[in-house]
Amino acid sequence: MTLGMGPALLFCPADRPERFTGALQKADAVILDLEDAVLPDAKAQARRNIIAAELDTDRVIVRVNAPGTAEFERDIDALRQTPFRTVMVAKSEDPAAFDAFGAEVELIALCETARGVHRAGEIAAHERTVGLMWGAEDLVASLGGMSSRFPDGRYRDVARTARGQVLLAAGAYGRTAIDAVHLDIDDVDGLAAEAADAVASGFGATACIHPSQVSVIRDAYRPDQGTITWAEAVLTAAEEERGVFRFEGRMIDEPVLRHARAVLSRR
Image (cartoon, rainbow, N blue to C red; front, top):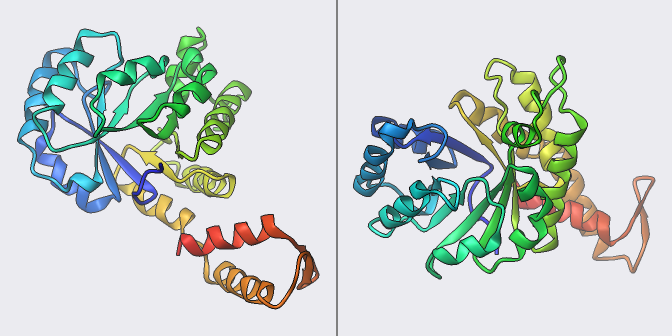
């Protein structure tokens, strides 16, 4: 199973219901956040806001609090009173916790702790899992670190390792991999570079925290006309060839043809 949404997933605090519709209009999907974006004394109202929300269920994800917390149980009770059935589980570490959800619920596991990244394969294998996302800041905090990035904005090696592990786990089980948010809203070039790397590496979507980031992500995931033309031409050539063949000076085999098909799927 994979997540059938577009590439730009926008977080929206669940205690700000006046933003729900606008966020959904701007992004491919909205993540209504009951976890870190909501202060403890506002969580009860945030749950009531989600129960009252009238939004396109196919493009809404609800992020619940971490399993093992009292807030997690309250979040599940609230979800049962809504039509929303795509849920992001914060700080996923043990796939057994997913059994708390009904069979109709599809889960995006947020692997953002050392234990969660370590068990990403087990988490991806769970029957309710449709996607995996990773998170840099909580991961580094779980290790006792202080920063996921170097001063120039590049991820530290531990963050890049976690990113790769989550991507590989998602791919191994046919789940959608979601890249982490870029916290520096003004760093448009940095976001563009990370989103371009994400789609080139195999991520299916990138999460974001501000509406201005949506278009940057969409542009990165959308192939340019030159790439589309190449993909169409090489697939046409493959219809007349058998096995490995030469095209525009390059050896073409099945993995390259799969790359071409992936390009056309993102038009």
